[in-house]
Amino acid sequence: MKPHHPLLNRLILVAALILLTGLPCQPVQAAPKTQGQYNMAVFILSPLVDLYEGDTITLPYMVEDLAASGGITLAPLTPGTASVTASLGTASVSPDGLGGSITYTAQKPGQEELVLTVGNYFGTATGSISLKIKPRPNYDLDFFVVSQHQDEAGAFFIALFIGEGEFANQPGSAIEGRGSSELWFSLGAVTQAFACQMDPPIQGSSDFMISGTPNLVVPLVPTPGFQESFFLDLVFAPMPLNGTTIVCEGLGDISMNVSLPATTSDPNEHNLKSLQFFQDGGIVPIQAPMTSGLIVVTRKES
Figure (cartoon, rainbow, N blue to C red):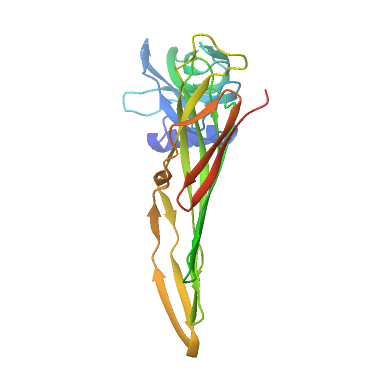
C-alpha cells in the first residue's frame, strides 16, 4: 500500500515519534543504502537541546523503503533487527516495526558519532548522527552593577544591571558557558519649581555567552597555596528596551510629557572581558565613574 501524499505521510510519522518521546528534535536523514531491489533510508530525530556529559536521551528513528515514485512503502509491523555504536558514551537500541529508539548516555565531552544499522522486511540500512557533548558546568557566575548619580540641581538617574550563569572549566575542554542578564533604569528631577519622573522605568533582558582561556603564566617554583588562574569574557546579545514617558509637573499646574521610543542597547559597553579568576573562584570588583559592582565566580560542589 502506498500513501496518497508521501510528504504528508512522512510528516505524520515524524510527528508521531515526537509525541511518543516528548523530546524536542528535528529529523536527520541518513544516506540511503541499496539492498536488492529496495532502496532503504534511516531517519533519526536529532535533539534540539544541549547535551552534557552524564545526560541520557532517547532518539527515535524510522526506516523507509524509497520507492521509485518517491513514496513510502509500509513494511509489515514486525520487529526488525538493529545495532548501534558510540565512542564517547553508551548506546542501546530498541527496534519496533517501522522504527524504534536509541537510548544514549554521554560519558565524555566532545563530538559523538552514533552509527545505527537496521534490518527489516526490506533489507538493511545504515545511518549516523553527530552529537556535540558539552562538559558539565562546574562554576556559577553572578554579577551586580549599579550606576547612579544626582547633581546639585536635583536631577538623578539609577541603573541596575544584574546577571547569572554557569560555565565549564575542565582539563582538555574549552572554557564555555552561558547566562542571562536584566537591566532596570530610571531617571528624574526634583526642584522647587517642578518634578519629573520616568513612567514606566526602562527594562530589558539579554542572554550572554561565557568563554575563557587559561592563564599560561605560572611561576617556575610555585609558592605554598598557589592556584592556577583563568580569564573569562562575557559576550552579550543585543538587549531590547521598552519605551517610556518622562512626566513633568510644575508650579501653576504646568505639565509636560516627553515620550521615548523603544530601542535596543548593547550590554557589551560594560566591557566585562579579561576577568581573572582562580581555580577556587573569586570576586572581581567593577569600578568606573558613577558605577560600581561585583562579578562573583563560585565553584560548584561536586
